[in-house]
Image 1 (tube, rainbow over the protein chains, first blue to last red):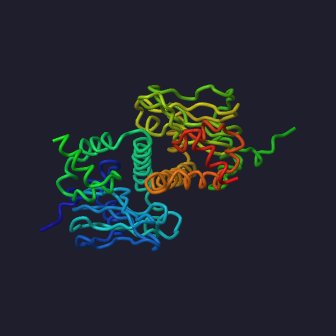
Image 2: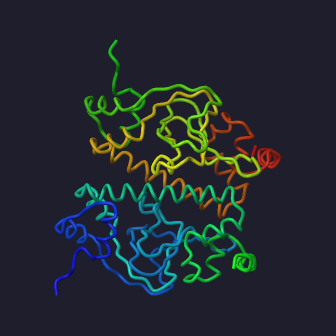
Image 3: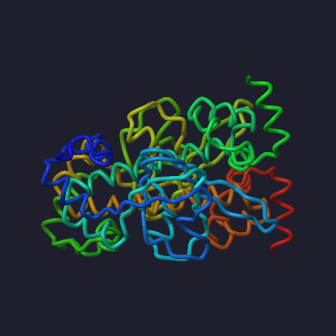
Length: 195
Length: 195
């Protein structure tokens, strides 16, 4: 049976920003590799140099780090249709400060740094796509900073619940607490209050 | 006397990333407007829609917001060679959450959103320039989040001092305290300790 190219998940995702012909999509897709990982497997570990950017087809991953007391802090979660890597390590080719690991069994596409550079050079559409994604990534980070500077834990809990309600079904309380930077007891109190 | 084009400050800045012919630079420069502002003047106020991106030739500006208690929080400072706007408002054309105002008398170039889009469409080199700037902006924001999540005030003070020593000569203690999210008393204590 012929593959219905326009229903390819990556194509549908790219076409939210750029329109592609079948030939263009085939060319772009040839740079991506499909992979599956099990819950708890790592996509990147601290001190490694990030050589791949991942796009999540299915499942949930997180980027995190551990402070000097061994406490986990979560920088971000990435679920279906999200891109993830340690962008500092990926762009500057410096050792990563982060771990990226699977919160669920996941299915992913990845592109290597070299291939991403080649694709950016040879496809103006993909250059535009990534420029736009980068802008939106920057906005998300800016808002996270504003929130960390001004909002109480309760406000940040409530915003997370409004923005990503499915996260609360999919991710353990321990991880939500590590994202918000609170103890599990504080989180339980907030959950009781906002039931 | 003919202008030495290669010594134009904007050209020197752009050429850190992209090489330009005189004709290309003239074309790019035609999109920028020169302006001067006095200390305390605003480049952007809350609820306005950011229509300009600024590049600082000389002086220091800050982006900040006020919480419900009227307390000022500083998102970022921008000094010579830095670009600044409220990127969320500028990109999405939504009302700004930020104020951007002058900490010193400043000299700036700015480009409007429409002109930036046109320049991005018509100059592949400027598209590459902004894509790279956007990547580095994203790295800076990511590091600010990691630091807010894991570092003590003292560590954040020390990092700021190492990274931007000139800031401490140019900016009041009140503003350094608003950037670090501490009281002026705490800041004074840290300054005594790290003398």
